[in-house]
Amino acid sequence: MTNTTAAETAPAPAPERVRVFDTTLRDGEQAPGFSMSRVQKLRIAHALAELGVDVIEAGFPQASEGDFAAVRTIAGEVRGPVVCGLARAQFGDIDAVARATEHAQRARIHVFLATSPIHRRHKLGMSREQVIDTGVKAVRRARELCDDVEFSAEDAIRTEPEFLIQVLSAMIAAGATTVNVPDTVGYTTPDEIGALFARLKREVHGFDGVILSAHCHNDLGLGVANSLAAVAAGARQVECTIGGIGERAGNAALEEIVMALRTRSDRYALETGIRTALLYPTARLLADVTGATIARNKAIVGENAFAHESGIHQHGMLRHRETYEIMRPEDVGFSRTQLVLGKHSGRHALRERLAHLGHALDETRLDGVFARFKALADKKREVFDSDLDALALDLDPEAIGPWRLQHLHATTHLGNGASASVKLQHQDGRVCAEAALGDGPVHAVFRAIARAAGLVLEVDDFQVRSLSNGADAQGRAALSVRHEGRMVHGRGVSTDIVEAAAQAALEVVNRIERLSPGQPLLLAANHA
Ligand code: KIV
Ligand code: ZN
Image (cartoon, rainbow, N blue to C red; front, side, top):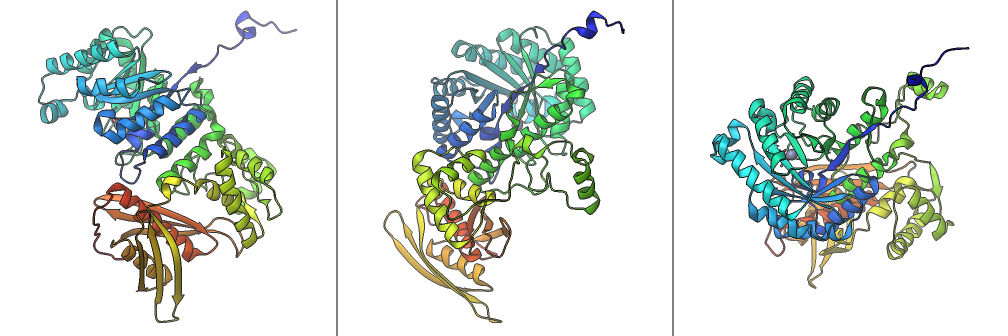
């Protein structure tokens, strides 16, 4: 018989929780190419709630009427996570967040103020004392309006550590319930941020009941590594975005932090509330809403993340999965099957399969998808999961209009270019027909659509990719166009790749028009 001690038989303590603060709709959305309408933001916010994030940063209400409206809608409709709005350390901003989040189940006001010498001198023109005074007044004001107040010391990483300790201690005394330490410019390294967080835990006053948070940008590609180092040193909230979208090189990617904590629980012994099987569907939804494609090799949610191509790897995988796989694809929602439905499949089977893929559609949307599914199943015998994803995600009413494609004809003249003619109808009643020549049919179609919409498109990138197997596979076209310094994306899906390209161009002109409705739009150079 072996002797066991009480410590050996006692149940292991429950792992501590790291809160996931998602800022896809604020820090992520402000990056070029990721802007979203209010309806699109609401759709993402519902998906984030389903995913299990603790906090949704829904926007910056004082920044624009659109941002205010989006935060207000999300606060009024999304249940589960805390809904948070960003504010500068100014009463007007703080009051705007309070108004925008008044109907939230649980609201948070997130006040930020820069603390680093470079920001104090060149941006704020404030002394250290003025920074503390301004921050304290702002946090006190926020606490009068809301019980849950986060303070962020912008550019904390380049702030003198002893001053940062003073600032955070003052903000906690003023009522902040979370203090966030952003690496605003993505400058730190894991060992540096780890040491800083450990010091903050030791030296900041009044931490009892207050959450220490990390917010890491990815300029050196270290956003996730730095967030994990901060967590290992005591952070209990991580600020991150789906797919790592965000300013410049982006923010730390939510799915990477979550799966690192889960896969390496032997090292972190911490848990999150994320339903990891929804990571892939959520990333796909974001990609579809913004039109920005996910890189194939993106960790966790890229198409190649679980693909084993080399013979040696495949052999190892067949013998024992864990030889080359540290996570199971189904753990992140990659539960793909091959052939699923065909033209004899009914509405019930479609609904079941869509639900399995993470698309919970109401009856009206299901009707629309079912009609398009039947049309597709008539064209191609086998309808794959990827086809169904495309059908379900392409029904966003905001992505349709103001222009609709009424007619499209394209011809290739072997060795002599191509020509295309299109007819577009605007929702204000205008009908514009145009024809154009091009190097190939896609080029000619882009030109004809751009002319009909009164634009010259500067194409930055265009790609077509097969969604499944076989000569009748649907092609997904992804088009990126530069417009007034912003990147605008469009995509289209069809068994006809010229039609898919036309849909992508149409989405681009629609997005541009929605960005600046009613304005004559001229984009120069590199003409499509
Ligand atoms: O990167 C940053 O400093 C921010 C703050 C507003 C939190 O996004
Ligand atoms: Zn940021």
